Image (cartoon, rainbow, N blue to C red; front, side, top):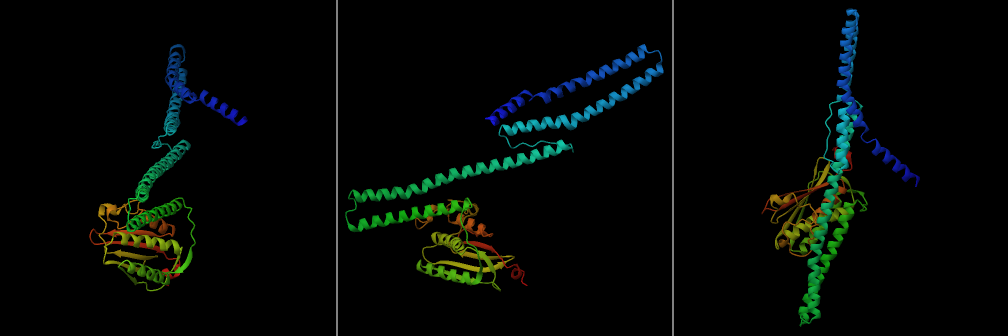
Length: 373
């Protein structure tokens, strides 16, 4: 209660004295010419009334010097104090209106100049925060719209097939089995979408737990590529793995999360690659202080105007080209987040009609070995 009363008193005092600075500034500006005219009048009277002209001239000289010094001081005060403070006040008013794109020019090198520089830095930070806030808001709206769209289609299909079964439209056991298989695929898609959404939101909020371990990269990648080779064989595809490292290196990874990042990239190649004859070539090599895994496919490639968007959430190059319902549009976005959480990165290069190459980079933890000593 006392705090609120004190706050009201401060606000009342602020409004009472809000224009005090400008009032004094205005009075001082009006006082300049009046004081000068008064001094001229004094000089005139000295010449007119004082009998000793020499003394009158000396007095007039001293008064003139005093007035000139005073005018110079007031001019400096106007230039270096009052004008910068007036501009600073206008900037504060713009900030209060919500306009953070404000910058105050200052040519004074004093405490007020430092204050203006601090104000400009604060305005820039507020502008950056506001831009980030707007970006997050747009992303949130886009995310909700995409989730609604992606959930609506399979749920509508599930509802339609269930109604058909209940209405007796599926007369034969074969048709019922077909309908149930379609319902099962749609439910699997919804589950995968929810899992991807949960994972991506945890990554976005920095709340996903990681269990990093120091791992020799060669043995880890050899076992992982053997696993993917077997999976692609079951899909009538082929995975070729080449280890071009001259020696083994230690990397710090969460094996489960890194596995998922690679799986998302290879899964993307499977979804968009040819039905028969899919070939995925992987190559492990060192570049600087990073160990890179290049994943090259023989798919249709990615158009140049769409390549820069592929790591955006829910982005699909062409939804008509996916061979199943398992594409959520989050796979590559999740892969990028997972690599960045490892201190690495993922890059893509592609030529339409000639396939795509994704390069996953991990920093080498053993700097002694990384230097080649």
